[in-house]
Image (cartoon, rainbow, N blue to C red; front, side, top):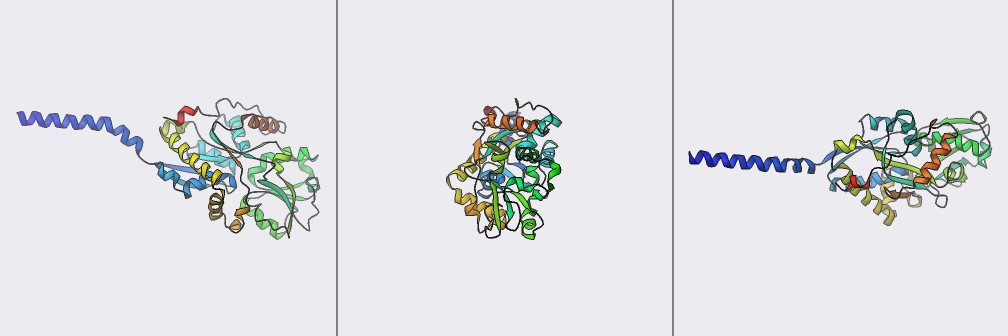
Length: 321
């Protein structure tokens, strides 16, 4: 009887220990996260986080999912097909206005006029020498910029009907320029750094800041509100890893550019000349600039409604739990 009682006590103690420790074990297990990215320099914090094993060190198993269309990327995020994403701010604002779903933005990127991340370029043989010269010409641009085209055209005194506009996949722009099938193109790093100035001219550096909004909010990094419930410690791990990636980009830019070259071979020999956007942590995001961009976009109907940005920035406390 005594042995049975002792065995029962041991079993109950083991069960109690299991009940106490199981939630902690579950919380500390690695989590699988899918990151939505595009092929531009705005994906660099995610690429550095993966290449430097910063996500793995913080118990995150990352998977990259590349998108050409930012609207599809953010739709897939809210559909649960990806967990975290890098998006043009216009896609974020438009999604809030049209779907009522608010991205939780914890990192931002700003394009500065003083250090061009984007530019309008043209072949030397093209008649396009100023931005206004795209009238009646074939002008190509990547999907990341689609929502900014109306603003740009308005600011240079043109309408959509005045230009032969063509949206092409980001990765196809260098080939179209080389083939001479366009008169001008809007490019974003790392497509600007390898530009051969013996074949092409830069028509306008920092076109987004010059013709859309200054300073220009380049991209937002965030997750859906459901992420906070699905992964209790996910935000904390995510922020530690991405903050570490940002620190590498800020203090070891040469290392970050080498990582960029690993993913985009067309800039392998030239990524040392690549311009990088200004990175902003969650408390550093230039919210007035984002609000100004939303106002500017609304004037051209993208988005058509006023955007409620009140719940777009998560409370910093969610990253400390």
